[in-house]
Length: 154
Image 1 (tube, helix red, strand yellow):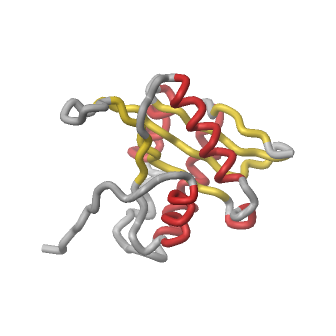
Image 2: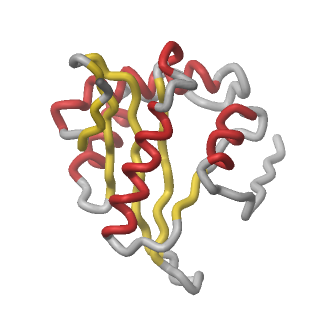
């Protein structure tokens, strides 16, 4: 049976390993992500700080003590928006063999419950435009296009 639970600092190694896999997966869409960052001192400190932050919620999906995936969401204030409290999915990754089996949905639904209980009115996510599987997943969960980010090499 799949269990969704709050991640703790004890899960740091699992989260680092999953995020490394996330970056490897995203390398199929872009070469922009530093593949060494996750396991670097800066990457480890980033995740450690996130796990200790009261405005960050990280959940782990596991089955029989095997970690299947995780989601990391940060709540932030944006003074320039009418609903200035907004949460952002910073990282979501499901082990390849567990995709399309409801694990991502379980994580997303649980994080939505947590955010509603904290009176957070909006949740956003960014996905690489070429990652059509991720975009389809998010749209299936009620996300819609709001902002396009364009980049140029100089």
